[in-house]
Image 1: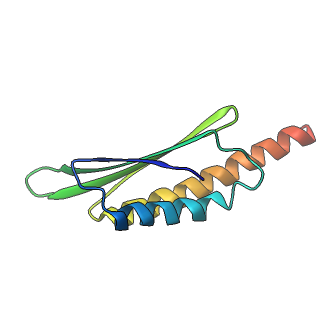
Image 2: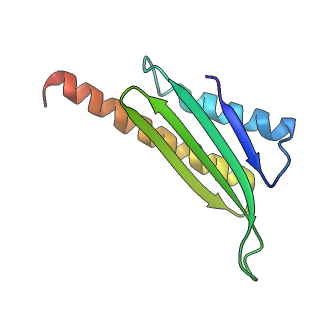
Length: 107
């Protein structure tokens, strides 16, 4: 799966890029025969309030036929945010595929 990765307020290193690619490849195995039209991923570093410190946000927009699957998570660690986005995206893909199967069955 071809992913467009955008980094805001942080440097997109090769390690971060490969980690994102690896996690999205793991999520893509749940797609099966579903065609991916577009996949955008954005990672961002923002500063919370006085006591929050740095907060990282990861967001994925996965465009599939007739639907846009969007997940956004914030964490204190960038890699945790990416992992949580992957987990939620897997759940959304499973739900999307179940709906497709139910429509074919006429439920």
